[in-house]
Image (cartoon, rainbow, N blue to C red; front, side, top):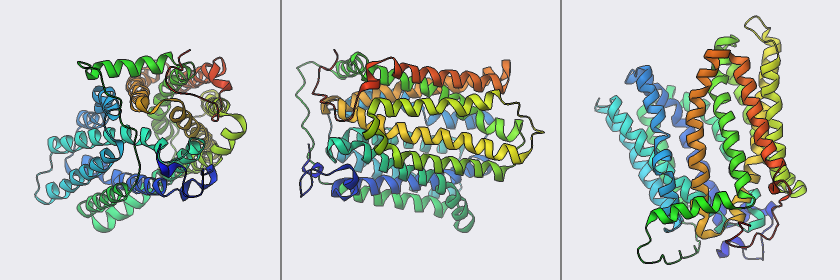
Length: 434
């Protein structure tokens, strides 16, 4: 564990996590990167629709390319992160992302931006983002004390929520003022600054254990999968989050179409609804450490999972149509997004903090990549199933199915040893598979 976790005056309490220099640099770099990504997201949509005039099939391909690296490389890169140093990986991937983003203005100014060149850019960014995510999660326990992990994840969640809420509006304004080429240069600059901040992090990472002669990466991957799904509390946590992702893929795929097309909500009102959701996510991340300390990790995650059920069940059961008054629709839909984001804010920080505290360092990368890769696969197929559910049964039934799946995710926690787990349990080291 790095000296940064303790700080100059002894252990750092959860409330003081941003006073830890290493984490402050990590948080600043992550926040800058989140804002840059959110700002440029608007420009990417404009490029796809207006510049290359992509067909619906091409838009689907570009969307899928963002997920493909997780499906095919997630477990491999997770295993590599248990062999490589994570902090240099973060720096190099940020430099790589800045370079890739800087190629877009060049392609625009030389009139060589096509579907295929943009596809290469999207795929390269997806691979680099996968490396960055795979390095960041196992690095965090080296930057703060174990008891501060929930607070650290909450701080990261707060800044990500603010970036996701304010970034698109800021990006739209900048796109109008300076145009897409300058906007992408701005994002490349932000990512470059984040790389500089990451390079200043002082952390001593645990040296990877020597592998037996002839042991290849496949053995490491199998070991990580086996550890995750045999662990007494990580197994139900993983199964619960997989189930949650199935329902999440359905509601995120359908909510926009249901709101805008089926209910006829105007675009300005839809933007306001999503903004209210951002407020809920921020508040959830704010209260997550206190809830985790009071209830324990398992019950805090269970609370988040349980809160998720009610808004989508209400949306499925209420007789809403395009003739329903906007005065009723607006607060109702805003409440759905608020509660949904609030629940995510509560559970995300507690879930990540618990995962990072439980797994030994030499398995962190593989444990996280195992869960993350399965989530992406489930999301991919869940999004496809959403279309079939709506086509066959309509929006209310599809949203009701999602609510039931959310409830199952909560029940997995309730009827498992995880619901009694606390962040300050003595987790020990490997072998907690009893």
